[in-house]
Image (cartoon, rainbow, N blue to C red; front, side, top):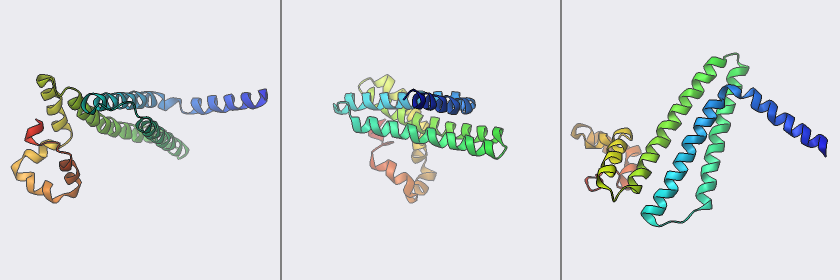
Length: 166
């Protein structure tokens, strides 16, 4: 039994040693996902009176595991192709995309949390509109383009960006 434990520990340590160049990326991913989960849980509690949901927690853990696996695969493939720097650049791009997507979601949740505090709400709402491309809907010249594009129609259904929410 000790041999199996030793083998498992050795394998895990070896894998972590191999992935050491992306350690900082993994830590920042964990931080942004944790902040996203906490803001989402707090927004649900404050705005809708929701209690802790294991379903949402499991989904958040699953998303984190999937993105972590994707980053590890990118590093492995790039390193095996002899382009370690290229794979690290690709991983950095993926992390910037994750930072953007989860950052916009965090801002949306902060809007829900601080809805009763006008000054704070307006600050977070402005940042959300600016970063989430909701501001594009307010430009008259682009409103026809936005209406024609189905990817923006999903955002309109939840009421984000309407005058009543600002």
